[in-house]
Image (cartoon, rainbow, N blue to C red; front, side, top):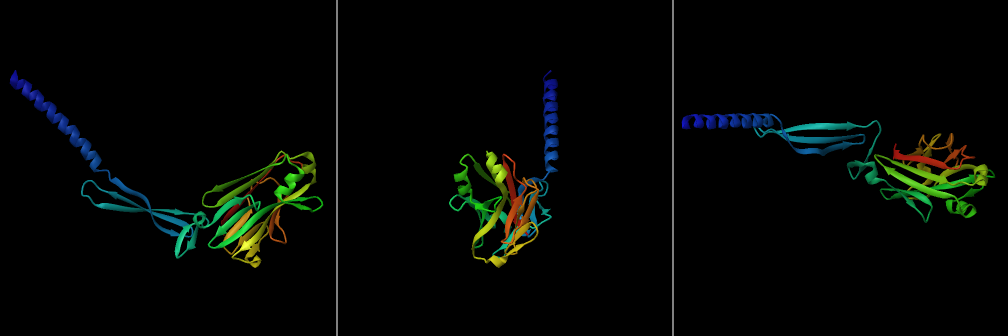
Length: 236
């Protein structure tokens, strides 16, 4: 009886040892991730990451590379190294100047919303709100590999809806660059041969263009109780 019991114990032990060995063998075939997505190199339109793993069997380190290629440039050269566009270029709203402030590498330009009526008279946001206190202005800035900012005018009175001709975004108060460094196409402005500003397709209004004074203007926005305008700031 004792001998039988000893054999059972040995059998249980050997079975347990077998399953432990099987489990270890499974894990030994799978590398352990030590570093994942460590940035290795950047170009103007790519990010390349180094992935390091180690093999349990022999302890060797396996290196692989993951490349992300973008259809347009997303990185900007700064001090001999490429960095993400939104790390170098900053966009924020300034209540005092009633404008979106775009700044980068010691340069700055303000993008100021201007409301134009049917008599071509121009108003700042505060001026139009003094005339129509019920108007609500809101803004939003989204940051990805580029900037998307949105200006929304809501609760618009009927008189305002009938008299508005356009809203334009004027580039003013240039610092560190000249007006000649603003280049315009049919519906975008390029700043310093580096940054492009243009309307997003989701904007209300079906007519947008660049004016002679290099402002981005959008029309056909009358008779609307809310006007939402989105614009993109990105690398050229």
